[in-house]
Length: 227
Image (tube, rainbow, N blue to C red; front, top):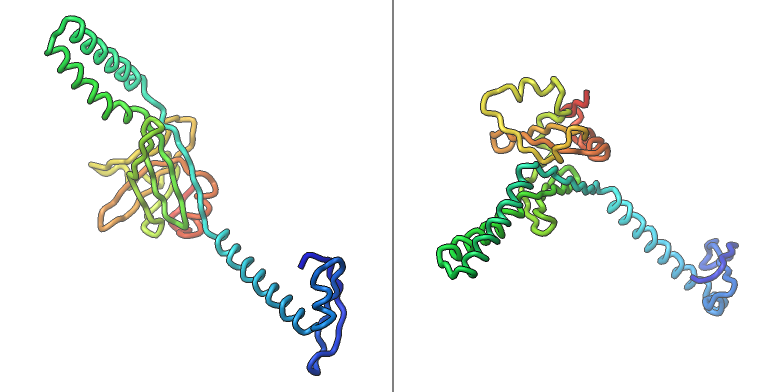
């Protein structure tokens, strides 16, 4: 109400109602004419603020977390990228210089392959965790984004560090494939998550922080083993 508030009491309609006195406020003339109306306006204001705070607390209670993981590019991938670009340039320049149609066709074909496949040699993974759901996007060469996986923590069988013996019975089975969404840096701690989706078991490797681990433990406390 844009003023300092002083509280007293007055009688209105046979009830004791709190009296509000405002200093340096344009509501003061209205207060002098109709205290009951000012009280009603103030009460509505309190109700609106209370509803706003409640809604804000509900929004803030939602668990939202983003993690960006840069995949370490292997030396072979970097070498392949340089070789592909160099070969493309040689064939294109050679075809135009010697007017050789075969060289030009090979150069164009290599250029098309470089355009579609070379960006995938450099990849980042973005984890988006919202209220027990983990979505993973791949970002190729910091340009193209693609949703590659999505998981619900209610389908979690076990979560444990990648070196934990609690995973032995799962990983020692034949034909087990692990989808690796980590940076590939052995110095960074990573975790194995095993999900049961539509009667199929899916295993992933990810670099999770303490905030996500704490929320997963809240959702499925018996499925999280951090030892």
